[in-house]
Image (tube, rainbow, N blue to C red; front, side):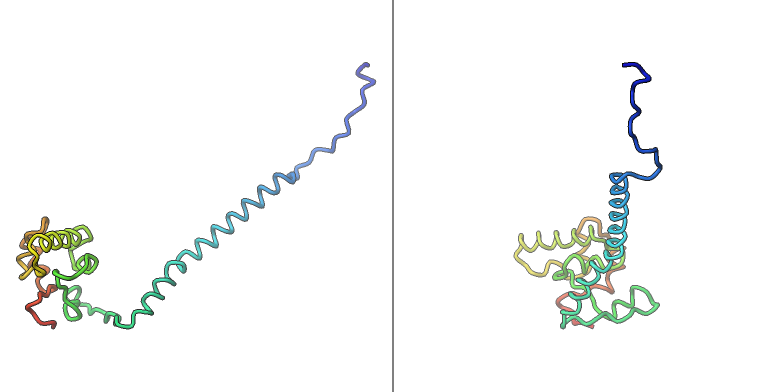
Length: 154
């Protein structure tokens, strides 16, 4: 067989059109991008709806009144915090007391309650100075926000 005797192959003409396999990859990428856009739009609602539902079924909780422009001291008029009974997240709401310090207060309180058997570990604001990281300046800053069992609620 010589070169002149070889029959040309019956190939389709070259094209710039994507193949079916390539087209399916493009469609798959578009579908994934669409799903991601839809999920990013739904994410805030997936968080907000359960929270709003939870707040709606809490009949004994009154919404907090809007605070005046006076700043954090306006919160004193609404509610004061008892460090002997408050959970860490309520303590963390006080100014300059973050989650770490609030957890330290609760850990110290629980430790002292277990050791002494007394329910009231903190009888006055100065007792908070025994917690690591709380000094006299912090106690003075927290004094208007704190309430103890011996005091009446404002």
